[in-house]
Image (cartoon, rainbow, N blue to C red; front, side):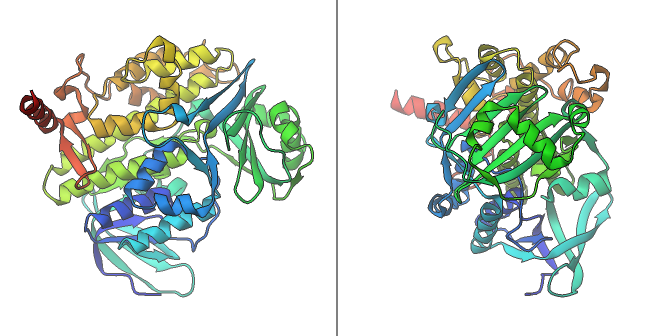
Length: 493
């Protein structure tokens, strides 16, 4: 292998979508970026369904054409048989230019992004593990690394900033900050496998993810470009324990049989993989950043697979972190300003999805109630005749991008905190949850964390900043944007 440098401006730990995106964005801005990944790709990862917001970020890093050309299964929306209702939604309803996303084999998708990062000037090193970080006070300043594949080299690499994209392992959160907390409201277990010869879902949009509810849980069915169907079961941990008297595969097959939507697709299909399971995967760090470091993607938080938010939050947080670091390194903002903007922006996106998922898990509410909840969690005043627009905008991830790129205020977080007691109360949590087990860290994160404004104004934006993507990536001041708009209106009046 080529030799790792002794120093770099930005060290990125982890080569998944979050790490590759952050590294690519910073390298394209001309910064010296080194990325180290413990595994040697392609590597397997669950989580195949992308949202349209990721298409926006892929275009921003210059990788969208490569993804488009790869041949992944196009995804135009979703079809749900949820509770007593059935409905579908299409990404064609979105106002932006991205009207679709993809269902991807993550091994292929992640490798494509990592190779793209290398082509954009990122110094990529696979088979390298960060064994230890050294600190100057609370600021990380260097990493001790060792080779995990193809040799036994080791060394130390100093940096100005580190982006922790180490995924669920969460180097900073679990080993140094010790600030990761399990989300007790989503103590779920996911069990999945892959099938060949499945029937095509004829309901809903082209390439849609099929989602079907069952008592105490739900199933996903994701068509992939190689002809396989990813099928997973998600149940609350207590329900899983109560039902799993047999082995894991038998439990999995029994759960599929309970869901007519998925069972029908698999009538003539063959299970061609082992059956895998994960639990206790829903968590959040008490803080997402600090002096000299940013936690992105799963290293900061993971919610639940219900809305396929994993890659969206990875791409979104990577864009936020890269814009923040770029502006700090160019002396456009102070580091404290960048850290505050990142923390609030990423947490707001996470909390909104947390509320939306918790609301959806109450399967008795119905479609209209879900749409109303979505409208209450957005900044737009959606018209009654387009009640599902807010829902589609949220579940596509586009609401998050719009807010940080347009300098929208953070009143949404106020709405979220106002609804915590209602939506996560004893009456609204699923019957098999213990209301007294609600995570106090989540409650504290939702309430009283931010300052709010009653007006849509420059001062009401997240610390007065927004993400600028052209002509350079960074943080812009909403005040400057407002002045430019006013000047433009005066010129054309």
